[in-house]
Image (cartoon, rainbow, N blue to C red; front, side):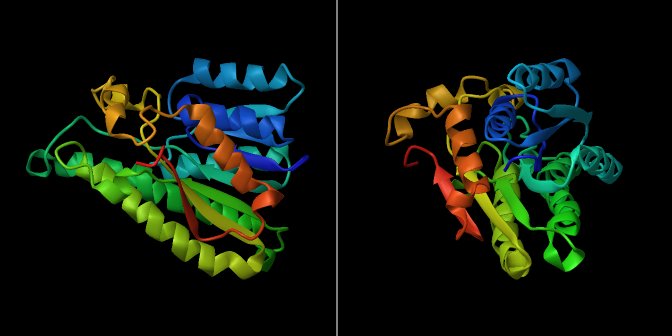
Length: 248
């Protein structure tokens, strides 16, 4: 991994932050994409640089193609791209489907699905041996919601993550002979502030009794699984989806 660049979208908080720091500890140069919280993103950069790592933070709303192109251009300045972690994602307030607006659904899909596909498109252009690249890894962030459907909570979010599962399988097959591995992580109930952004900050802990392990997971536990998939230890894994959910 030494001297290879990884892009981590949504890298200023939660799982993205933990992944950026873990990847840097394993030798990656890190390009952190963040939607709005520059202070948090720069704190992640400072944390990485405090241990002699290399990182930059780039403002990027993955729902905007121009922002994605700018993110990858900035990453190109760091060095050759070796990995992409499609972590950026949103949830909406708890609603039943009949109460969802077209605008909410369109934004959910633009960020969680289209944004991930466009980021992967740019990564493939750089990493595929078909385009003169040296290969690499793409890890997409799905969710156990893709299996459970999230009824009465956010079916649109669950549907967006179901799309990520299908995309992971299809893209993995498409580029398997071009030096690129593609995998996904399906986190369960994780102790991050994404639940607060959906208007239910205590959701993970409230539902933890439903988890076979009887606890929520941590961002570091997800990050450890991601960086393992990025490593050569996972060299024969592609088009695979790994649940990191305490059995849920």
